[in-house]
Image (cartoon, rainbow, N blue to C red; front, side, top):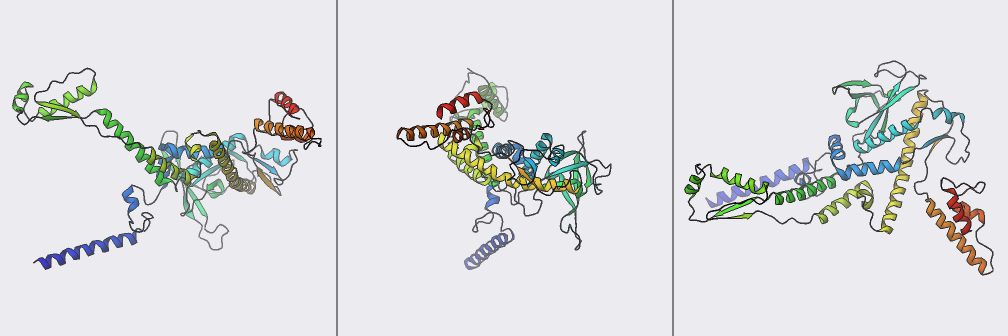
Length: 449
């Protein structure tokens, strides 16, 4: 009998091991731990991060929301400019094409384009809907040369591919042939409409294997929410002062119930009423007979170490320094270096945005909304450009070097024009370059020279 039982137990254990192995082969993506394929499921992480997960994270997660807003806010701190020619052209004269294109690329348009960039960071891609003055339905090709009435921005969740172009000889093979847009009406209802690709510009990547901005750090954001919610719940439970009654073994519950004119089964409700009165008011008396009251308080551990680990992981996932992400500017040296790194990161991202802006401009040229041009470029200002104070500090240093060299009988290392240029002033005028407080800076520069 014992041998049969042992064989049965061994057989059951072997079946369990095979079942776990099969589950690991069927779901190899449930975590990065090859030993525990269901680790993410046990940690509470989703196997596949959907658009709904990312949107909810952006809408309710403070750190994730801040990451998107800080990146968009810095990248779009100033609007770009589309010029005729290349970015090496230093001519300040505005061409005829630039004047006409500015009628389309207005400040209001750049604000909408920045909003599309924000939504792309949340949902992997977003759509810019073109309202063309051709009086045609959305599902029909656009009539060229009719002009642009306005643009609108759509979330990835409301704009899906409706039909793919599968024609082998088609120029748009493998691209969307029709988009499906879920339009929200002013009365709160919605309707689904087909939109021709002529009337849509996609910002981002809508392929199945696209990786969103928030996706690599999603697990860390979930862990942050657990730490925040768990520590908050612990403080709440301790503040609620849950009471425990300990009765002597000789206590007579029947006599206590008769005091309140209730049965023994209803005595628990009276105890709950007394506990609520204790927690609700101040200076409340609780009379006891053969019982002692203790408060159920559990020690709350400091969540900072666990929170900081997940915060650093989240910051690495979105490539934003932790101090910038949470707005914690403590050490001046490190905070300055973090700001320089973040500015350089946003400046490099502007290069990618420039390509997308050029693609959008090409789409408008193809629709004959704006005129064609042989060469164009997107230019931005420099986010790492020195401030007025930093420029004056450099000019002052250059002046001190001149004084030291002249004191030793040598020629000055810098000319007056070079010092003025370092201070941000144009040598042909008395006004500073890009500064308003010209008089104060001019006096400081002259004294430095």
